[in-house]
Image 1 (cartoon, helix red, strand yellow):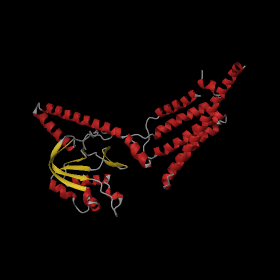
Image 2 (cartoon, helix red, strand yellow):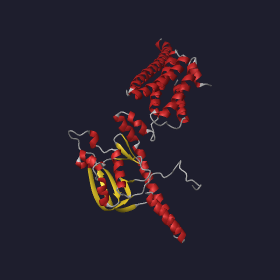
Image 3 (cartoon, one colour):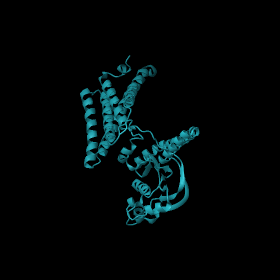
Image 4 (cartoon, helix red, strand yellow):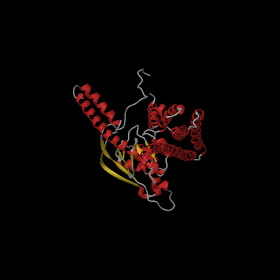
Length: 249
Length: 128
């Protein structure tokens, strides 16, 4: 028996309403804000909504941190296994050495060495300086990383997130994201390399350090470190589109 | 009636599960406003159904047109730099409230009528 028929007289309207609520369900799903779409959507949110919605995705970041730790552990075990295999014959040894070198280059291992640490923090508001100028933006971090690389940095971390070939710097509202993980000021950019070369390499007149310092001297701090240790890159290394050609050129 | 309202929820959920991937980019924002229009029309449909004034053509065209207009307004607002989606959200939001409160009052009246009828049926036996 149709449960609707007994209660609703002349139920010609029940079916259309039900069908269009199905369509409505599809539409709501299409417009749902998820982790992947939150970045495109956040500019439409009102400021308080922005902080609430972004905070609800914060849990995802805790999960991400836990998974990153797991990835680091598994990759380390992988290295151990590769080393164990490489111990057998001299051929295996050479193969493994070149494999480990490649992994160092791809930022997939712990590294240590001398270098510098650049600490960026928001300045204090004062007369004659716009708010935009005393805030550290994603672009500032991006430019600093680029300038460090140009100055010969061999490995870079941003707030202890290792910078690899696929690292991105973006922002959602007031938060800067490194590889999709939120970081907050003070932002600590560490670089391994010749400390003197790195320091002079980022202090040129049109560089980002000079630019930020012109707004507020206290926003940039540069430290020289004799030795520092960096964690490996823990983001995804899976590729979807690229293939290595099998035919020789 | 409760079954029917549950049915609407179930249908909406089925619809949500049929379409698994939220769309990317600003298009989703326009669809979000269109959702409000769709929700408003469904509420309006239930209301007119309860009031016995339901016309299928009016309902279906209302759904399609309201959704399209809301989508278009949100898009146009972006093109000319005016937050028109706010206007759509405001108007549609208040209409949803009106429709839902009318549905509630209608159901409440119906329920009270039924209760009064029961009472009056019982009364002749007790009063005499």
